[in-house]
Image (tube, helix red, strand yellow):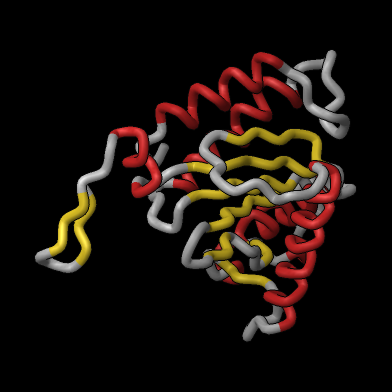
Length: 195
């Protein structure tokens, strides 16, 4: 059953009810060069009407454009400090050893993160975006009402690290053909409450 307003009710057959639920449509992974190394779709209703390679290029081009657009319109200098570094990072002039300098710089980098594009939303879908420090870009297209997607994407990235990056037999920058990764992702997505 689907409600519109307060008095109108429409009863849908079970085969059509999934159209009105929160759902996850598809998932892309791009390497740092912009090549799509993994694609999976679940409940995608409308196809792009073009070859997959063209769709991947358009998606990556849109990501680059959105990132550029958002950074140019940013009201800050591009970095957001989580904690005031002056309170926690020791003064670099008092550091004597190179290892201490590296530790202080790593700590400062963790405290200040670059502003990032996280999502792009229309009335029909929401493009959720996660970019890792290594340049890996993940895109998960969902219903705009889907919740818990940021945590889901972090979990997907952890699965990627565990099954792809730590596997010496897989080249992380090449097309991803790991059945183990595919099974984990499919299982995770299908068990998610927004699926």
